[in-house]
Image (cartoon, rainbow, N blue to C red; front, side):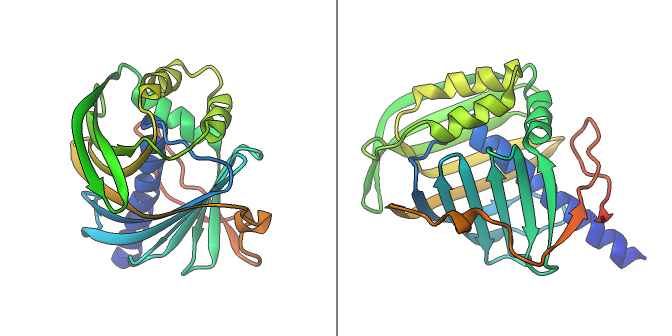
Length: 251
């Protein structure tokens, strides 16, 4: 029973971590051109019940669809964001299962957390070569219930458009907090090559460093964004106002 409880706690914290990272994507104003693919290394620490991990991340984006694949940790995962279906899916590769969440629910939770947040974006004169990209440093700070600092090294020469963010903003509906955050981060021009996100979530310090190693633009097959065939649908853990999942099971 203790082992099952610990396993459930790790699963809930894992979901919580994904929701936080989804929130960071929105806050940082991540944009991508249609048919856009990149690879990155990600080091994350501070998620309760999980050790510091270095993961490999692959991201595909096309016409309002996003697929994120994480490998290298104890539990490989895939996340699908489908703005056309207004849903997010989290796939557990080890259990051959997935959980489904309406995007409005995820954004609503992030928006509740964002209420009262004051955001400041500082464009610095500091530049740095990361890989083959010449980047400019931005520092984004947020105060409020969930204090956060994002150090972002942005490559201004990468051509991007706003389709993904426009679609996400449509899903946001009338959430004023999320709209204000997205509007503020429009000041950042270009694509983030390296980001260090330092966040305090309920007294728990979480740090994530992501460094892009490859960018590729070109047609992506539509099947890339389909859920794996034969995977079992699991019930999404209930989310109280504080944002921590309560439990989950087969549906």
